[in-house]
Amino acid sequence: MHRKIGLGALLLALSWQAWAADYPAAGAARAIKNPAAGWDHLWHEVLIDITVIGVIFALVMTWFLIRYRRKPGDPATGNAPKLSPAAAVAWVVIPVFVFLSDDLYIAANGWALWNNFRDVPADRMEVQLESGMYSWDYTYPNGVRTQNELRVPAGKAVMLRMTSRDTLHSHWIPDFRVKEDSMPGRVTYLWFYPDKPGEHTVTCGAYCGVMHSYMASKIVVLPAEEFKTWLDQEAARQGVPGKTA
Image (cartoon, rainbow, N blue to C red):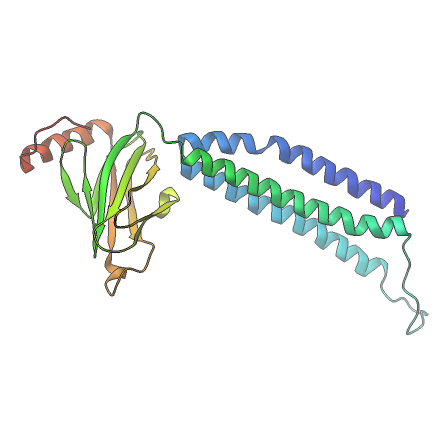
């Protein structure tokens, strides 16, 4: 009986690993196109993993409670059922193997997503960002400047090259699952993929002073043609010569 239990658990663990080895490819590939989709995919994997493992172990514990409960006529105290050495080792090694291999799988998938995130699409639009107490200043490739509002075209990757004029800030866009520090004397970057029109909140993710909580901005995603029209109009209004992004 114990041998069958150990063999069944081992087969379950091996099946789990075979599934895990093939599954991360889709999430990692999507992250190249859209970081938010990749991180959401990984988060869903984590939820599925902990749910499946939690249910399995809850069922096993429930079975133990029922199988080895005290029955009428049993003595108040007695010797616990003894496992063979092989079964005892199996009940220790196999759960550890399942947990560790699953953790390594999640970590490897997260690492792959992170590496893909650092590989910015070649057809991106780049915007310069200078942070300061307590605002975000954006400069488009054609020289147009905006403060605390970034307008971008839908369906095109957007990269922010960031620095700070005073202290450490952190440009955080929760809807796009990206956050990166901006700091004096150093250029950092992040990118995101706005796939459809809409508005998204930007906030500072690093405490930067007494007005930190007011350091909010927004990203307005426009249809491509509407964005081009707006950018040209802003260039004319600000008297900035240059090409549209």
